Image 1: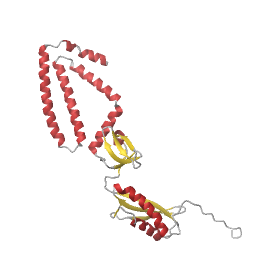
Image 2: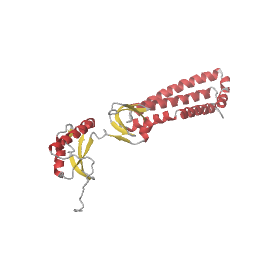
Image 3: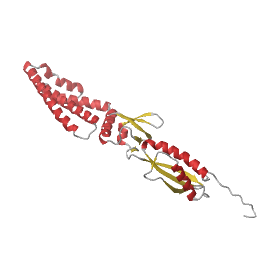
Image 4: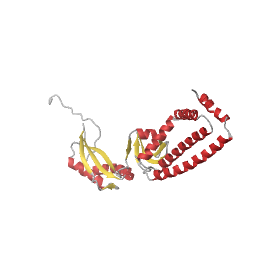
Length: 274
């Protein structure tokens, strides 16, 4: 049965409305409105006691009120003699059409409710998702606004945020800084580590605990790799990261440690020695 057929089935009841039915419908409507008001007050107190986000509480209460109004509409229509089953079917078909037309929007709204209720991040957190990283500036039902370190504003759909991989760099209150450098095989390991520690000492805004560390991490084809670690607060991460990189170069120069680059050594032997 199509939409027009359902509508025509509900219309005959309207033509037979009497004064008695109209009065009963008005009384029923008033009673329903009073009941809705009482129920909403009770629901408001119950929801306020939960740990849900205030926006989620608001959306939940609004949705419950809408459901109660729809139930009231069906009850009043039945009192007037309108075919309530046809009216319910009519509303179902209409809601299905809206759902199909706004599938992506509803998916983002559902994702927004998940984010607001689960709290994987908050305003001001630095997060990364699907190759995009930035500071959370705004969380709405439809999207989340990020500001990247380059000063760009990126709107990420909540559906992708709630269903995909998400990294929160601010949640722990600290972030590890890692810088990797290479040195010649001829440079003694302790001399290279001494240069790295000197660079760490000159780097401001790093955290004293956990203590900064230096490790030999890899033997490459033409150089030895060293990893320099320290910790910082999330807001000072980039300052520490960039400052440590500059201090490593100057420290290597002072300690006379060669900071290598990719190269190829060619040894030529004469025929007699060969």
